[in-house]
Amino acid sequence: MNTKRNSFILIIWVTTFCVLLSGCGTGISPSPTLPNTNSVTNTPPPEPTATTKPIPQPTATKLSGSFNTVKIESVALAGNLIGEKTERTINVYLPPAYDTSAKRYPVVYYLPGFEDTNMGIAFWSIDALIQAGKIQEMIVVIVPGKNLLGGSFYVNSPVTGNWEDFVVQEVVRYVDGHYRTIAESGSRGISGHSMGGFGSLNIAMQHPDVFGAVYSLSPGLFDENGLSNSQMFSNEYYIGLFVDEQKAILAKPKDQQLTSVLSMRGNFTVAYGLAFAPDPQNPPFYFDYPYSKSNGKLVRDNEIWKRWDNGFGGIPGEIVQYKENLLMLKGIIVDYGTNDEFKWIPQGCIYFDQQLTAAGIPHEMAVHNGNHQTYLGKRVLNYMLPFFSKLLVGE
View 1 (cartoon, rainbow, N blue to C red):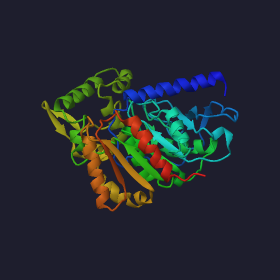
View 2 (cartoon, rainbow, N blue to C red; view 1 turned 135 degrees about the vertical axis):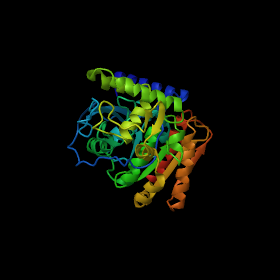
View 3 (cartoon, helix red, strand yellow; view 1 turned 120 degrees about the vertical axis):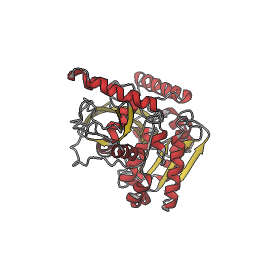
View 4 (cartoon, helix red, strand yellow; view 1 turned 45 degrees about the vertical axis):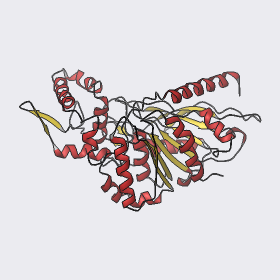
């Protein structure tokens, strides 16, 4: 391994470790709940094209893992209506012995949170866990879901593109085709934080044939009142401002309207609407908002509200629909902090726990006293990775 490459990896490790220590990752997103009822089912896209940095030649003295940045040209995201780029970047960690052995490895896929493009994991710390014998060697793939609004929620949308297909079909196929993986569900795990916590639960629930276990960190699950309590709708004044801003955008020249939508102050609200209440026939917003104004008063459309609620909510129905899939998973853990500043998140996690228990679905709750972000690095390194190390089948 040459000096230039060592310096490059060291910079990445130090940068990532600083993020974990400060807890400043930008993944402030609500996360999970279950399946996206607006998912668009397409035929599997053709093999994506990608470029990746060459893997170094084997060396007998290699002591640390390596890090590859990969760009994938996505077919699943083509044709989106908001001008989203189809070339996406993923990050691939390879364990210390990868270049000096011929063995195949289990893979953990990690989905970052809203507005978070950071890896979320200190790679040199993974090396330390492996060298200490605390976890088996594994490949870790980080798949950012950030889009022009800050987050895709890793779901299929006729407006923002088929992000679920991108993860499940294109990324998994690329990784299996370019690295020595054990290409079986029993050797693949999926995890994520916040928005990525939602994505990991949602994807694992729908694709147990692809991912054999899930560890969800601070997911934004809704209980019966979660949507009303969320930052999107807990303040009537904010709702009114959002409705007024929509009206102001419609008064602008048509060639400026979409750009204005993409820069609205409530980018999380817009992103959520595009993911869970998309409407390709409603430009320039391309989503249906549950509130309007009549004679100066806010009026709620309950049918549209239900679509928004089913994004992170509707848990009892989702569990009934996907019970057999959930029972196929080798492990399910939901990890959250009791002091999460998004108070509806721990409430939703408790509700999810109750519904899984009532349905007889084995799972675990990992509860700590942290908030939404501060303990993320420790939870990933000390709990999430050991969980997958025990469950995923290696050689």
